[in-house]
Image (cartoon, rainbow, N blue to C red; front, side, top):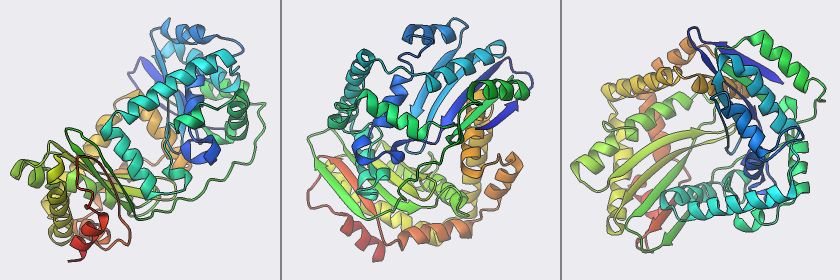
Length: 409
């Protein structure tokens, strides 16, 4: 187990958690949704505590405990006062090491998750991103939803849950991270006592992600059409990751961005429009989103393509400088919270097997100039693949090929 901590002078609280390298992409097709199911079951009882006792152990001291599942990771974490860090780590280790998977609790939580799936299906600006992921990485674990389909979730057994834990919840797949008022040596000693007898096991291999062109257009009588596009982006360790993030900020990351100014402020075609750059271990995506009326989707999409081409030609130094400032401010402001710091520590160790100094990250950001951003935009313009998902009252004849033709014109 890798352990990383950061003491924050002046803090009276701490955030501690365990990040497990086991998320949606580590599931077989028949397991789709099981990593998220396990996240829910973590709080439903152990050999030492029932569900109420888990909650009370943390809330009795004024703390909180939570978890989340992503495509590459499942995290279990708590925020407590400085005197209760050992208690928080004990509870988190208990839910990871000693789950009982009571059949009655499995059925209760199955119902909760099925309601969560139903809620997602009823939320257009959520479900459209699941569809975009699916057409970007078709027939691949990386393209499946984190929640999983209802028919899979309805059939998971206790043995299925226990088997996924056995295969994936091993110390060499875990990062224990803590930040705030913490004592590194004390946490290491406690972790050794809790996890020291766990044998190292070979980590399961995941299927590499391969971005592909695709589209999904679902016509439905909604108030708005939800329009999304994706291009392949760099992975976490790529030298282009900083250029991708600064481009996405300058292009559609705030009120001063090109997309916001051109599409919303000047033309009034939408309320929400943005771009973002996401990354995985082996690939990434640059994503664009807008919500607008159905009849305006083709025009909005064409304007977006025109703006993308223009960004490759004339992205200015002022725009890049503003995006750099936003990125640095977001990073530094986020690190004022122990929870954000612990999250960063865990992710950096999972990606790099070390924690880069902040000065190193800031230098990478400062080294991105306008030509690098223009070149990145140009790479998207010339990209061989583009994925699109649209949901709402939109013309069936609208196609991703139309947008590729617009870029090529």
